[in-house]
Image (cartoon, rainbow, N blue to C red; front, top):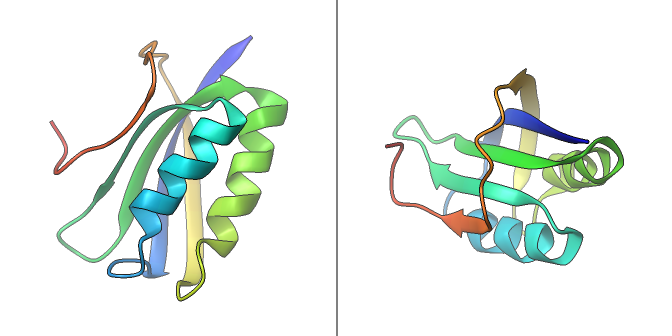
Length: 93
């Protein structure tokens, strides 16, 4: 059964290809959702997949790509939005 997570990643996570890398990992794992940069320097992710897949995805989020320095990852469950794929978006809609 799919779950929806709202994830905020803090630290040095902009300008290090975090969004592009997140999409690659999400596509590889079969996670659906969005990733975007926040004005305050955080990266915001909405992810939908089964529990086991989301756990693997969250583990990756805590490391991020080479060059990133993640200081915190906050997540909470949200309502399923039934995303069809995973996209990098410019800003929160």
